[in-house]
Length: 465
Ligand code: MLT
Ligand code: ZN
Image 1 (cartoon, helix red, strand yellow):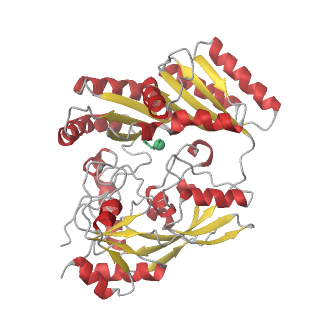
Image 2 (image 1 turned 90 degrees about the horizontal axis):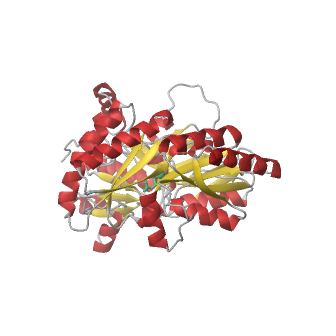
Image 3 (image 1 turned 30 degrees about the horizontal axis):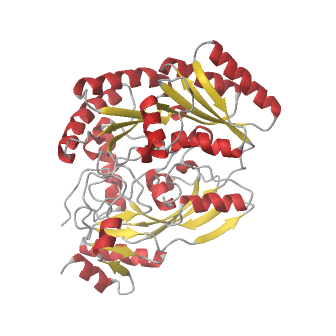
């Protein structure tokens, strides 16, 4: 019997769709290196239905691919091998807001921007923020421990999750930490599920801690001459101001974002590097400090040109230069590398990586941008128009072998925030030791004994059928 018929028989009230357009849309994320080929897409409408679905899948060895807003960039939500996609599109309820605890409890399918808006309506703030927040879902954010532009001040998704409900591989519901701030009662299983990329369990509900809204803020857009100068600017701004973001991009990235969005060049001076920095600016005194800092950096020749926001509209306008980059190059498509190193290593790493890629594939265009404040660099290699996808992938893999070895040698990670997923799986060993991977496999076996959750993602594929 095929998996869809088996599932429909075991869970008669569960909606399982086999419509070709739904299979194509829900079997894919934002990566473009695999073709969607799921057997069906399940749309559970409650936690009870998720438990029922997982139990049936475990009994029958049916692989499940959890799917949120499908904005991932490592193929974590790609279903290319006849799996059943588990969509959370019908689990989008806000379960509650608690003003004393300052928490919001939501089902897994609630969109990130909805949580941000809910916080705002209640005079609070949900600080996890990134370009795809309008469609990404909380369950997916948790599965990848989403980062974004404000990690520097507020931390990762992990730092916001105070309660989690997950369904394990036997269909059992676990309620983890229950919104507590302090809980010293043993292993904190919640953190195992955060960042597990859907390989240990399905997140069905989360309680998220909100924070005080930021004070009025200002944004600086700076043109900078070199990576060493950029680090000096970072250090100066960080010492003088309460920075909430410090992002960089190259002139190549500026070229693409301006072209795709008809944005003017921000300065007459062409600069090799650009920074978007945001800081809390509650009064004129802080503004004065910022101006002094800017003058100091300019007088040293670190900053070649710059502009400071004068209004909320300006803030939005300046952020577009950074936030629009990813989408502006998505059509090439890019081979995405989401690397992290200790902040102090950034300039040397970037230099070595640039020359390594140029040496192997001089004809490839590299677009760099990222979250310098977190040591997180996005290296995007653009596919030349004349090259087929398969040749591009092969050549990019050659680069990965060497670039990930370099990342390992400087003590970095091959994924800072996008996850390992399907695309980076062959190189997991570049960031994690053999012993670590063995422990990860044992942890997976205990939560997912039938091996049904997201097989082949993060950890190597073990055949179940
Ligand atoms: C970003 O920082 O813009 C996102 O991580 C998306 C990307 O890397 O393209
Ligand atoms: Zn990023």
